[in-house]
Length: 154
Image 1 (cartoon, rainbow, N blue to C red):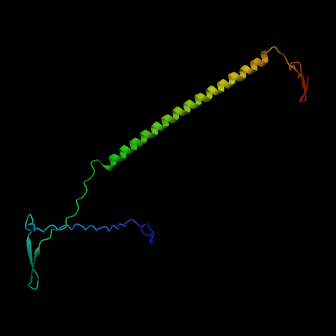
Image 2 (image 1 turned 180 degrees about the vertical axis):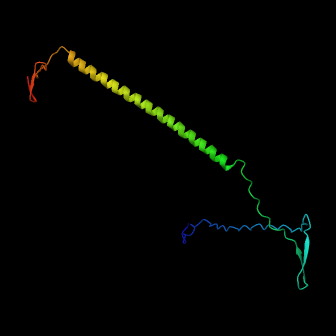
Image 3 (image 1 turned 90 degrees about the horizontal axis):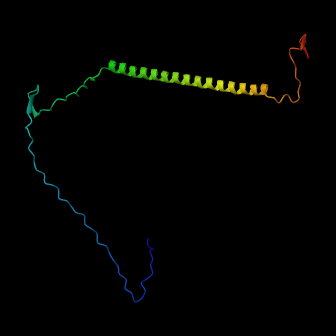
């Protein structure tokens, strides 16, 4: 942090040097070991070997197998039937919604076709019944026309 070489203190001023004193770690005294009597005295077993020697020691509890999990309160068949019923209801609801959607779409298309027919029919009626007559073009009276060999003579 500071450079290795520093300029000396200006004359007339004393230079104070502070040396930190290290803190001694606190040594915790270990807790005294107190012998504790077991709640029950374990049984001592003696075994006589075939050659006549006797081995004495504490009995070791046999390893106990882990408890078997209890069977579920509800059978798997009942769970499968319930899940199948839920799936069936979901399919029925989906089909009901699909049927409703198709009916609404059909009604919309029918109304659009009807609206187009009304608008187009109105346009044709205006063209027919308008009093402005024809401006340019040729008017052909089909009742008086003569058609000979796929040719139209007016």
